[in-house]
Picture (cartoon, one colour):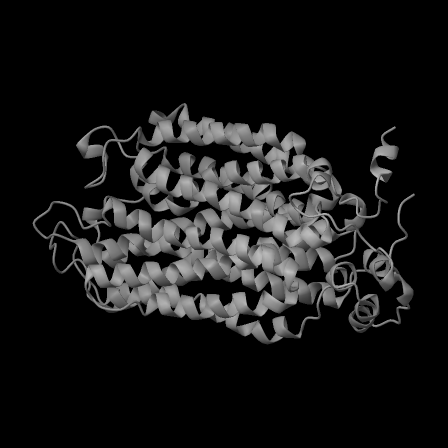
Length: 526
């Protein structure tokens, strides 16, 4: 027989959509806004940093980050994120969601500012300190993944829980867009104030010295929205599910949620002495039996998604250049190149990235997690192949717009698809005492894929001849073949999505099977 649901949890599951739901979305979502800004803004300013610190005026093309430096600058924050997801995911189940929630935000604010204040004006000093602070920035960002998802899932009602968690994650889209808009505004201002000839006309004067302020301003701007929400994040009470099911203080959980829901909740305090949940751990046979396949599905789908998603996002600037949508670097000065990169990423964010997130918010509690994820992976595979197969057609003059439209559609279906659902599902299908940990493991698996995508795509997309690859890079398989590889990872993600459970319309205890007595699960399948 299933355990009787605690009154406080039943009230949360059946609560009407109220102001506190939207407040929780904003508080948690602004963390994700900052996460996305900090992780993806580096792809916009990387070429400017390369011009500033690695330009050789005697060479025919402007300076770029050497292969090892580019890989480090791009990937170090992802390494920090992976570490933070595992650490804070585990800590969130041990100490409580709220206890460590503010600390991750403080880390992000401090390290975001410190990244812009990277020491020295010499390449070695700047890059070393930039990488150091971006690792710890990523560490804080990593903590926000499991904590924000878990907090929102445990605050939400079961009818619209998917939309609420999706809305938190959708702030990532606005973070990506904001990074592009800030870069656009700052570069436009400096471009107007400090005009300069193109690199082909004057290799020295084409890289404005004021550019050293530009990338620092852009990096530091990401700290602003996070700092604004710190006060409200600290005022959030601990989630009722942590307090009741893990801390086993149902009276406190009822008191906290009475204030949130603004109604009296009476709980049977004697249940604190009774078994209100199982006690087996992550490495137990019981977990393997109930949730082993679920964890395999959430980790693998997130892993294969992020190989493609981060490859596309972090190297938009290189893809735009290779297909000719952005002019050759030598025909522009440093500010003009930054402006055009930011403008291109703004178009992609506005037309593909942001709408995809909000389509998920609108439809996830209607269509369900499973079908949105499956559809997204399938469509991403199709559009990747549509880019790769006729690749030589897309790179011809006059066809660049078509390439960008198709490229934008892959972002749309990534976000109206697995990029959103891989974040949502792990916050629903695991028991409360392991929810943050399992979400952290799933997210860390995704970041492992992102690291492979970031480092792998950087080298793999290089051409086979010297004139088709960037200076200092070894021979790669080319952009066309790289797109085929990304299509194959999406296809594998499609297959693994078949093992993802559907949580739509169910309480967290029902979908995670916490409401079953020991041995009851077997009886239900007899």
